[in-house]
Length: 172
Image (cartoon, rainbow, N blue to C red; front, side, top):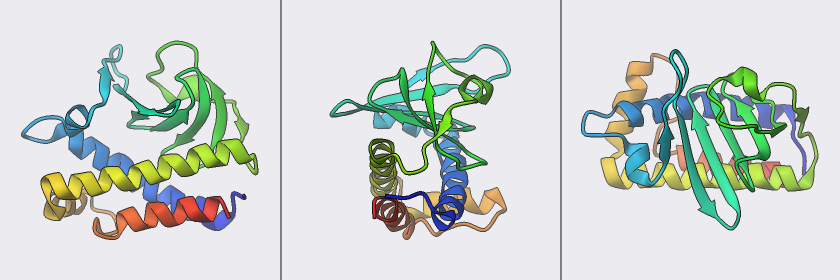
């Protein structure tokens, strides 16, 4: 298992796009898709990002913010990825986090097998989420949101395979 420069570059692009898409899902005219999918929302103090968390079973959780995501065996410790840096870090979480500064300073994951497996599992979960979005809302919903982003993007039809490929490469 390794965390290569190729994985970092591909992952950075995918995660930046994914965070944009989650934002579109939150702002959807007909209601918040993250809540519909089963996430719990915690409202932040003023001028901070909401926190969305979900128990994935088998002692795995995922937490989403506009600035990145966290995955762990509990809400207290795991792997954090900043939306813009894609440098996975081991973090201990103290209380409710609503700003990236609260997750700074963790050790880089690098080649740690358990943490890379946790991260690969989160990427596979992202692929399943995107498949649910396509089945629930249709591919054009995603394309419309991505066109409003104004940046190059991976087509929503290809996105689940991209997340799975990244997960596989991370574990090879």
